[in-house]
Length: 465
Image (cartoon, one colour):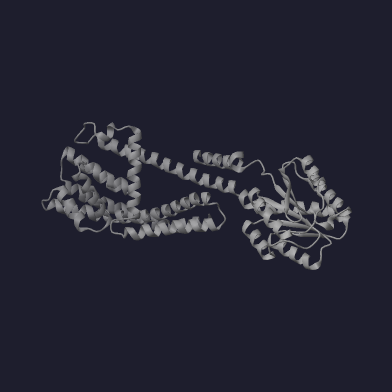
C-alpha cells in the first residue's frame, strides 16, 4: 500500500507540476513580410495596411509579431514585440518602393524565423523580379529550417501562384489568394490562425513529454521501493536464522560483522546481492565477453528505437536504461528460478555423498572438498564458493548458511542448523546428514504428489480468473 501511494504521488507531481509539465503556454511568434513594390501604391497599399492592422488586433496578448517590408531587399520595420500600438504604427509607416525580391527576402527572414521559432506570413501581389536566389534554393532553406509559411496574394498571375503554392506546400503552409480588396482582411486573419494551428500541431509531441516523465518516474519509484522492501525483508530473515544459530555458535565473542553499524551492514548486504545477481548473469563457465557484448547491443538498440520514436535524447537514455534493467531483471529471475530448482533437486544426493565420505574416514571439509571438486552441478559450484570463504577465515556454519541464503534453500538451512548442533553436543554427523537427505527426499515427494493432485483445481482456477 505504501508503494502504491508513493508511486501515485510521484505520478501526480510529474504530471501537474508547472515546472515539469510546463503549465504556462509558450507564446507564439509570427513574422509578417509585406510586399511594398511599385504596384502597391495608393488604395492597394492602404487596404493591405488595414488588413494587417486587423491581424494585429486579433493577436493573442501573449503572442509576438515582427514586421518586415521587402522591395529590393527585406527591411525590418518593427522588432519582435507584443505591443500592438508599436506594431500598428510600424504598419502605418509602410510606403511603396520598387522591385520585388521575394525569394531573397524569404531566405533572409527564414533565418530569423528559425532563431525565434516563428511562422511567416508573406503578402505579395506580383512575381519575383530582382532576387538572385532560385525557387529551388528557397525550398531547400525552408526544408532545413522547418519553417511554415502562409501566403496572402492579391491578383497574382497563374505561373507565380503555382510557384508560391509549391513553397507553401513544402513548408506545411497555404496560399490565400484574393481578387478583391475587401477579401484582404479575412485572408490575413485566416493566414494568422493557420500559422498558429500548425505550430500547435508541431508542438504536440513535446506536450507528451511531461506524461512520459511521469510514467518513467513512477516506474523508477516502484522499482526502487521494491528493491528497498526486498532488502529489508531479507535482512529480517537473515537475522532470524542467525539468531537461531547464535546459541550454538562455538565462538560467542562479538564478531566484526556484529560490531558494524546498520548502514555498513546494509551496504555490504546490497553489494553481496549485486555480486550474486551478476554471478547468475555471468557464471564462470560462460563466455563473459559475448554476454557483455549482447547486453551492450541490446542497450544501444533500445536507445536507437527510443530516439527514432521522437523522444528527446535526454529522455531516451534513462528510458532505455530502465527498459534494459527490467529486461535483465526478468532474465536473471528466470535464470535464478532454474538454478534454484536444480540446486534443490541435487541437494539430497550431495548430502548423501558427503555422508558417505564421512563414513569412509574423511573429515567434513575433506568430504565437502572431494564432492565439490568432482561435481559440475550448481550444488558443487556453491560448495566450492563456500570452501573458498572457509579458507579465507569464515566459520564453516556461516559459509554454509550463506549458501542456503543465496539459494533460498530452507532444506540446507536446517541441515546447517543440524551441523551446528552436532558440533556443540556431538553425535554422528554422517548419520545426521543421511537422515536430513532422506527427510528432504520425503518432503520433495510429498510436494510433487500435492502438485499432481491439485493440478486440475489449479488449472480450473486459472481459467476462471
